[in-house]
Image (cartoon, rainbow, N blue to C red; front, side, top):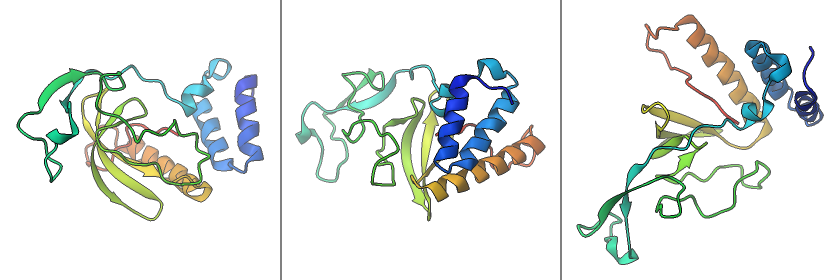
Length: 189
């Protein structure tokens, strides 16, 4: 398979680090894309989406505006801000951007934050052996979705790639969503 130097470097990295499932997934995406010379492997790993639209969030000028049970008091006001703007009260845990090489295998789930520049986390739904699930609002399409967040472990990553393949197969055989199975709208690493 003829691929660009950048893609070949990524494939070599995946091969050296024992991530054969990720390598085969990348090769499958290249085949499906059918544009081998101009394949943008950075979008494969880091999908770029337009900035999210302004959303209504609670604005707190003082910590005392929070009541004892954590609910908003009547004196709080709504304001429109863009997610990620300096005036936004919606922020992540305050830690630097995660790289995937952290000791902790779990991404901290913080309500009212945006994941992958697209999914506004609204509710924590639950957890399983190798993942956690949150409800989120897709800022690009405007629909509510569930996000399955896989723990940072090679075995869990390989299992999630198998799940993606299975969901792609389900989507392929029910493209009009006649049977209302689970739908795979997007995935990202």
